[in-house]
Length: 170
Image (cartoon, rainbow, N blue to C red; front, side, top):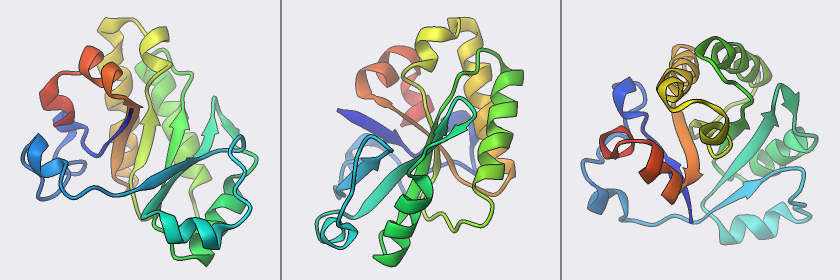
């Protein structure tokens, strides 16, 4: 299971999921979404729109654009699918995370994003020392928030439970 975490707990109030106070409330209602990258070919966005409530589009990774990002945004916009984005970082320090956040913010200029800008943390937790992880995540999320977007974390539930305290993502 993947977790789209709409809170960066310590970064409140900008990133707090409004109206959600506990896991039971967060689990109800359930919305269906799709994770879309250049590796996931969507040929019929109209059909997809009939089956999902939202899309999360990869804007890029390691300071490079996803080659299908623009086409995927168009598919969402043309079919009234609310969308957010995610970025796969290569940052290993708070300074790197700030640079990557600025790259993402620049890449999003001109787009009307409905949902958060997620930091995909699966590889991050493997490459960043535990003592630096909080600073890296906070630097990215703070920059995204300051730019007017809602930040979030995107990871497998097991990674969230292992590397982030419950209060951070609940």
